[in-house]
Image (cartoon, rainbow, N blue to C red; front, side):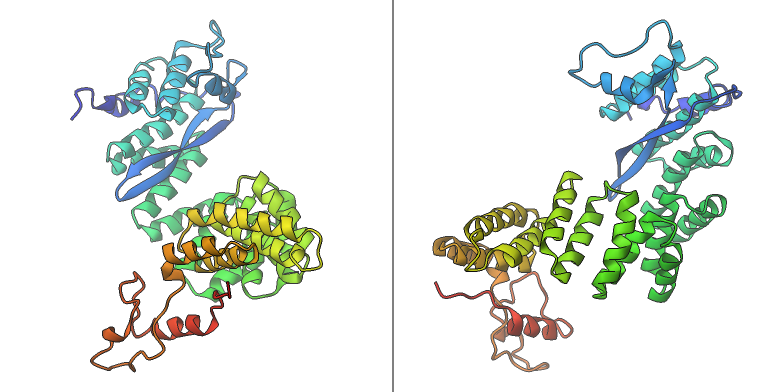
Amino acid sequence: MHPRAWRIGLCLALAGSVLAAPARPREPGIGTLEIEAAFSPATIVLALAFPDTLAATDTRAILASMAPGKGKPLLPRGKLRPEEEFFLNGLSALVGGNPYAAAENWEKMRGRPTAALAGSLRVNVGVLHVMRGEPALAESLWIAEWRRGVAAEAAWRNLLALQMALGRYGRAEALVDAMLAQRPGQRAALQAKAALLRQFRSETEWEEFVRARALASPDMQLVYGELLLERGQYAEAVRYLDRGLAELPGSGRGWRLLAEAQYELGYYYFAIDCLQNAGRAGYHPAEFYELYARVLQACCTGDADPRQGRARAAAEDLLEAGLPKDVHRRSMAQLLYHMYCQNSKPEAARALERDLWFHFEGPHRDVPELGDPNWNKGLEARELPVKFGLYAFPWVMELKRTDVYRAVL
């Protein structure tokens, strides 16, 4: 163990002094930011808490000015109390990836801070416990803060994330239900409840929950709009997605869903507008590039369209940029093959087929019937990661019948 052990022993020492400090009147609100912590076998996203103002200064502005390369930190010297400076230095160190320095700074907070500082410290020290592999200690701190602290919502978010990471879905649902009983419109609780219902309950129960809240919650409007989109009810999907995005214009995925609904309805220019909004919101997964290319192909690549050359080139660029993000998207690889053929690039098409051959091959049509002792010998593609077993075989044959990736070069 590291000799300083991240100073994690401060949790017990501070619990009787700093963390038990009496509240002062007119406490500021609590702000949060997210941090990823290693948590076997993957990572967990947790909330760090802080008073939204310190010494009449926006805390986020102070933290931003403390980033490396920003010059002199924007710390109003003479206005911040020592414990506030230690708190900020520790928070900045943790965000910068140095939990040791964070623990050292927070160990120095031996004064009597405001309740906002004490509550934020409970939340953040819990994050240090998770990083050290002590989730039980983190859980006890967060439960205490959630029950009676000023940083209760940040503590609740971390408790929920921890239960989900540990696979304690019953406890997670209990946390969600408790929050919804206090605040029926709490966004994170609504989203978590919908996710839990979809994963562990019937489709009917999940749909009833989402539909019942779709009139009041923009998040649920987007979720219900996606459900309608999956069912092919495109006009209704547009209605709900429009309403949700009016309240959540920064939802890149919401704009992508609306673009898909508009595309299916044949409103290609509306779809392009939505995709541009999704891009501005920072939404750039592979599906974004593929849909953008399909919209351009549908609206602007006809033989009589004067824009066809530019549109096909733009679609090709989009697909080339998006396919490396997910090389397993068969539909995207085959669409790029088509674009190369239309753009008179046969060598590029052949190279794509050669490099991503698994998107352009399937079982031979003379595959033995199920149960034949020579079953595997009839599969040229048996080395693929896809297992062509009893349940997969009909799907494979359907792909073989419907794929139209070949073109005359």
